[in-house]
Image 1 (tube, rainbow, N blue to C red):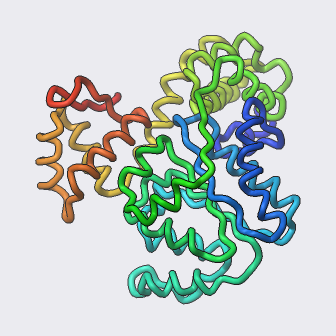
Image 2: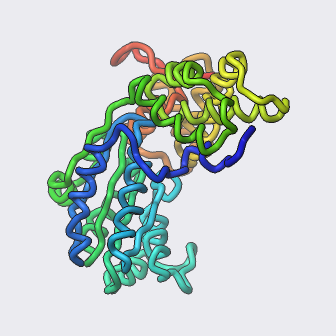
Length: 334
């Protein structure tokens, strides 16, 4: 049944983008100076999870590479590369300047010096989950790098701008802001259709079933793609010619569980401590949570930082928040 499993993966970038024409145009306009050998405008893509931000960023830079042959691009997931050292290392890796850099012994300033010495072709860096950066000074350092253009991706503007110092914020507030909304059911169907056409045998999934998947995804393209992939995998393992409605219904909780597990695996060490405290209890108040976190963490972050962690985990459906202010409590999503 499955002809091309690649197109059923969330990181697959399609050759054409549907239902995000305005967003693609806005980002392409911000990057247009790169086609003339200049630094593009810093762009900030913001919106809920699964609204197409990463896909659009990758699509726009791929298309730019077709126009500007002498162009370097790099994708950095700041949830994984959240420290200043890791971010600078990943950026330098994109231009092959990490020779003899050792994570334990090389000073951070040496990485920055190598970056400042960069004098190659235009360089576009996508910084995904940018609000996860532990040290936002790196944004200022990248902003000042000659020939480097940043595309920033975050769920919410305030999550990014809140922790910034004035110097960094003043630069980034001039960024081109591109907002993303959740997809409608019809839009999600339009996103899933070409993946079905390329990835599955003809007739494997009906239009009505795609609408069922889109409705279950609640506007999140990643969930929709994962449900499709899980349902197709189930049917393929059973050597069926088509996907049944029951297979789709059964795929929904499994798909959500797989996405949650991937998100849990991406948590930083401190975030994992916070998550495990919540998972170990039926519910926990903010004060109880922070006290328990301080006992477990080797180098505890501030209360404000932990609140940012909680907001992030809530947006990614890892935890649930109930109540407001002093009456608020947290519990895990099972």
